Length: 400
Image (cartoon, rainbow, N blue to C red; front, side):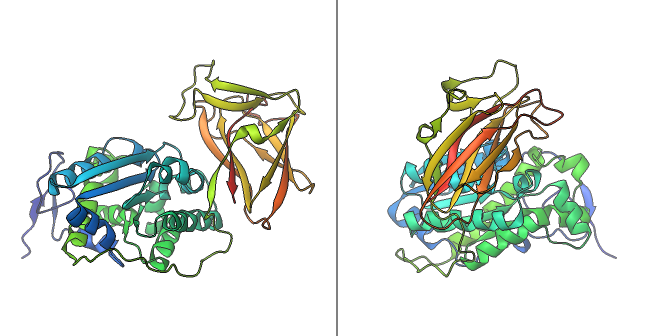
């Protein structure tokens, strides 16, 4: 007869401060089932153990921005390596997925100096935001190659977090497309990766805990945050046990997609040529009472809400887009690149009536290298749920 062990919802061997109802399980699934070491993190470990000085960056959405696993990782590193001076770059911004990450990487992470270890998560917001699979691939590969071009010695960990849609995919025998793309890029570049989405699904199926009572939301409860941290901690411990050597600069493999955004960045909004219906607000803030996101309020924005308002942006590169704030009055814009036929994009999102949401729009991601011209104008109609025709541009996105 099998002896059932009463355990905390996610482990049988570690004691955590988060209290959960014990459940009966025969075998607790190990964390190691859900991460892959691949090439490891030799250069990071050398920086930690030999140089005694290391920088760790966290690039992600709200699950990275919110208190939880990230704080626990930083505390653990400081406690585990007390003689090492750590610098941490917190680059989590709620609502943002791989497309914003690819274009904000330079400003929000790389411009802050040499980074030894980069954690990346985008799988939840890529599903929520409806980012298509090809764009995900170009984003994620672009982030990795861009980071390694700036610092060939950087180590990177790719992470896929959980959400109800991923649980549903796994229940149907499908691997979520976001997980597929994270793992594809991680494998191609020999990077460590963690599939926390699969871990959560498997452990629920193994009756170690439940989504409704324990994990609760795609923004994990304290219990879920502890689970995420425990797996990441286990990975770090495995990485630490590997022998480390002086940093080595390995040649990058051939690109998975030639249009990946490997030089993504922001182009200043002042580069646009405006008609009289656009204004440059030096420090926009809402007057309708809706919430905002950090970095997308009290900053300069190009603003127009009059149908027919038009701007022109000369640029050089293979991709062009814009980062906007989409509130309850978000309109529809039409755009043309190099005098091609105009196409429309609705800037109103499912969340616009409750939040001035940072929203990233990619107009085109596969342009020939060279000079181009973007024309953008406000349409004379809008989403039935919107209160207006507004377009508020915070950044232009460009892959050089």
